[in-house]
Length: 395
Image (cartoon, rainbow, N blue to C red; front, side, top):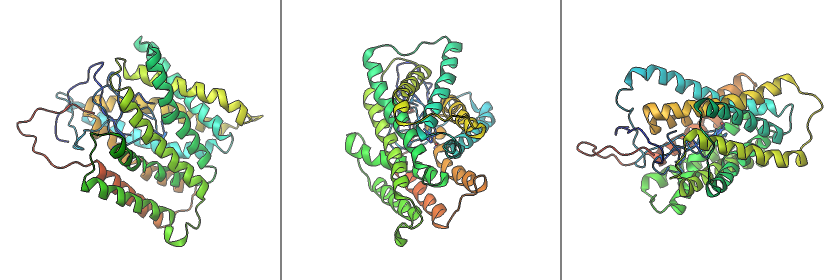
């Protein structure tokens, strides 16, 4: 959210990715908000909140996330060490820093956009609009690049599951959660995705063995969650239903990352193609159920509508493209550091823009959660001198 260099990925070679949802954090690069960092698989080289997409390359580690929401973009090295930028890219380092800051702001503000969007629309319509606008962005990019959507019934079947776990379900849960909790708390709950991912990967992935450092990180993260919720005072002031929904959304990101890693790590399609297909499926899923569970408003209030538009175009579509570009330029591990800035920005946006209340235990607990998440992804120090570079693994 860095020592060995990162070779450029080639189509058909999966990269392991970490991230968010998002809030952000599709299985192709995130993910949306959402995204932010669990490992992901990818197609090509590249993401689901929202809330995170995947990249083709080595299998990703399910311990990180971003709010977007596609599993193909964010990635981390298996050892937890950072990956340095590919040779010849240092002249664009300043441009990367700008994009890193923009991506952090987009995904951090995704929770604010969700909050404002639910003031005018039902949560399912907020999620449907987010997916629809995000899908349109990627379809336009596919048309410009003259690329096609993925082929093969097996690939589409796995993408259907990934779209549900990384987009439709967590995006909807975060939207429902923010009817009851602040955008600040939702952003902090999103930061628990790396903890869920690490805990699940130790059980579901045989190559991820428990270490003292990882166990300590999980324990520290759990203490951070209890601190945020004010456990010593009986969780007073917190809505348990909304908080549980936000935590389940973060858990869904982690499950989605692992599923992508096990099923789509070697799919020979570009990351944009896979992410576009995943978001398209997520849009279709929400489009089928939303009319039966939510009523479309008689009017279209401007501010909530603009928030949903920003959530889709920026927090889901543009965020994926930014994350993909950073992964290709500076390496997946460095790119996924964005996850650690998301709750900070979400908190600042909620307090300064929405005038949300902030007690001392919320930022303190958030710092503890982030420290625990960082600890779970930090591997033992190894000497890299004389060793070949490792292959790299996004509200």
